[in-house]
Amino acid sequence: MIVWNRTVLIGRTDVVTTETPKHRSLDAVIAAIVTLLIGLNLVWFSPLWGRDGNRYAIIHADDAGMCRSVNVATMDAMSKGTVSSASIIVPAQGFEEFATFATENPDMDFGIHLALTCETEEFRWPTVLPPKDVPSLLQADGSMWRRSKDVARHARIEEVEAELRAQIELAKQRGIRLSHLNHHMMVMFERLDLFQLYARLGVEYQLPVQFPSQLAPEWQPEVSADVWAAYEDVRGSLSEHGLPLLDGLDGGSYVVHPHKKFEYFTNVLQGLKPGVTEIVIHCADSQASSPAPPGLSRRQADYDVFTSERIREVIDEAGIEIIDWRQFVEMR
Image 1: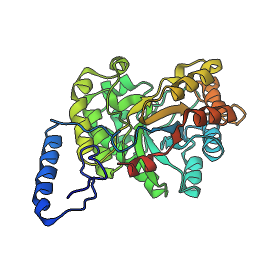
Image 2: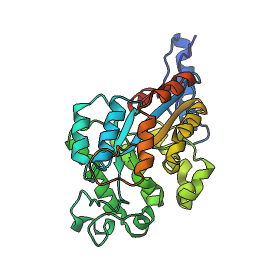
Image 3: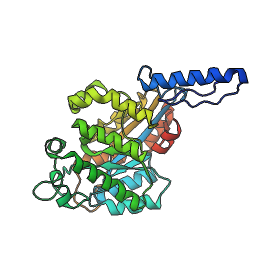
């Protein structure tokens, strides 16, 4: 007889079987049918199957490398706090400092915060590639566009692809062990070709991308109509190539008043559904010397919350397991 002790997860058959010869052909037929149905998007297997209904959280700090203030707080929150993952802005002024930390801590979890925008007034960053090679990505002053919509209006896709590959390759050359990709200011959701490139880079580099299995309705104003329409197809492609998809994604904390941060994150953590949810935060230390990053007081509050014993107690009492992107991949 066949004993199934694991399930089909996200477009992939991953089973251990004990079988007699007369059942081998039946097993092969079943596997073929399942693979075909998934490939045709006629059936969808939830990534929750096989996770026993447990709740997992990736506590993720964006904008590492932005500046000294962000770096100091992010490094401390990863070393002593409950932050389990971070993504790095390669073109930013603090990249080298954070790259040193990342290479000295290879067991920690780092991704690339793909950047095509630079929203700060205090400091500006250019592209990794020479300006002459990517003119559509730059303002007249030689720095990146301030808003994602400016990128969508001006950027040529071939220049975007060249620049983002250069960012990934520079991080790899610097010795950073990469675990995932995400994007600064949600820029890759601004245009369909950007969105498709985002997924394609993940597949090519075999790096999971920050991509929830379902787009929540409240995301619709933030996502272009053609991206919204193509979401199912792109999601299916990522699954077919073995890249895991988040069951939930909370990125709403940036606009929360600093005094309300602990309450906000407590509610998010206590309300997590089964599966893997990424909680995106932005850390900064107001005591570190540097030009202040945007939203300094809100970033300071995120840092304070996720280095506090109180948030550890909330996590423990809720029975949530904190993981990183590498562990998430291993759960497939």
